[in-house]
Image (cartoon, rainbow, N blue to C red; front, top):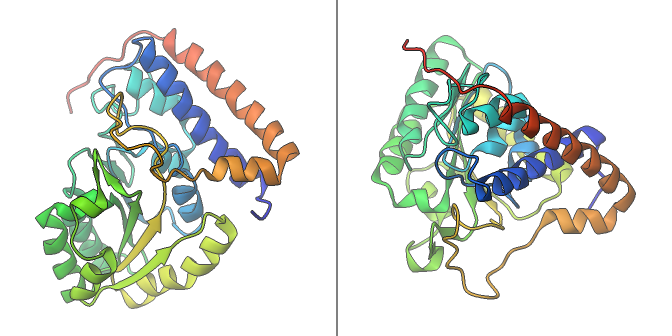
Length: 293
């Protein structure tokens, strides 16, 4: 793997350290509800970070900690939200999955975000040309009918909609091959929507591939589906990993450590120290209080 900038690597390892800390806190019973980590998929939102603008909307899903941290770099607020402590993004009501901050919205309801993102994209086209709506979904989300209603309108109305598919090969507990006929590419093309597949983890190369495509979404106001062939390292949420031995689990982290050990070790130590400090500080805060709007 090519050497990353310190900023990119720091964000990658911040997300990884955050997710590992969540798993440790969960085991100690210190989290509210369950949690879905993005271990192994951190490079997806980090790659997109420089391609998105503050004027863009981002719609995330149940596995969205990395999406949020790549947008705001706010582990304090996110951890307070998940632990239900003072300073939480949504007063501790949204928890791990349901967040609203500025132009960022996440939900745990699969497929729900696409029609909402299409509606926002329509408004952006009319009143803020050049801005786009980016929505993260998984391969399992393609089993929801709302996906196809949204794609139909996005193409028919020529909406600036960027659909990022984190295709990790398994939908909760069902391998893709057992629940999806055809391909993501074929389904996008059925509506005349452009599709691009990313099979690499090199952030520099990913950005080089996607930059002209994202620019086209902005300039021509048209939808695009970008499908990342990625790997989820952990279980779906907690204790529900039904994948058979040998299920593919490539990890960019191990590959990068091997290629750049000195840079990786130093920045990872900083990230872990920071997250440990944040976790201790947030855990000591009083419970958050829900303020009715």
